Image 1 (cartoon, rainbow, N blue to C red):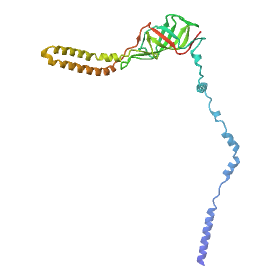
Image 2 (image 1 turned 180 degrees about the horizontal axis):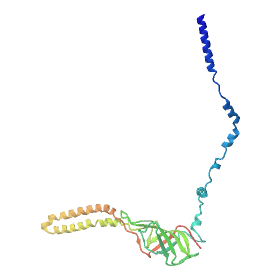
Image 3 (image 1 turned 90 degrees about the vertical axis):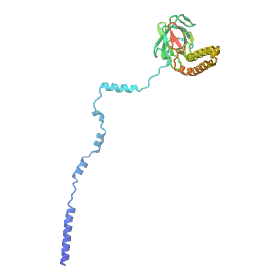
Image 4 (image 1 turned 90 degrees about the horizontal axis):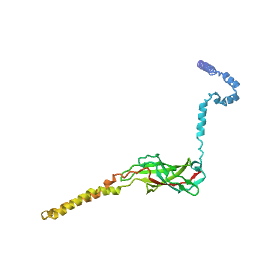
Length: 280
């Protein structure tokens, strides 16, 4: 009984001690209550909708102009009809019309792309609706050129006629050359002479000359009885050299160049219109 009373006393002590500590925590809810009382949801929405741009500094006028110009540059350019750019006047010169002219300066393959060349008429050109007077100046431009090249290829000059001076005004043209220095021109290409065949023949001169000398020596040796047995050898030697030279000359000629384009001032040319032209 004594031990049971002790056990009960200890148990009650433990329960009382633990119960005191378990219920000693007291949560402070006053802060949360204050937040609920002062919270305003409409004010929060107003703050989020505030325009941030009002707080930014104003752009300088120079930057505004640059921004405006950059936007305008993205707009597509207005296309002007070709007729408004190239042609003026009421009288039409139909395409295919030709003019005989002479050059006012030397034309050669030394002239680079973009070089201006000029021509002029020597006699008036009479047509039903118009007359092109003498000394009318045609202005052209070198659009392509090169000097002589390997494989005996000659030089090249390509000229496009751009304008004509008519009654003190410039008439824009699109024309090309069909005749230069009294020679027919194909595809507007004024070319220097291609000399491949001539060069091959020239390279073969050594073999032919040697063969002729050996043939003469063979005939000379054969006419004398004492040297008759030696007469075939010069002939064989000359024949071998001629054959070798004939085979090699086309190869060596390939590494040679053709002739330059060089047309003196005052040479005759013929100009032909590719498109209609209009004059007043």
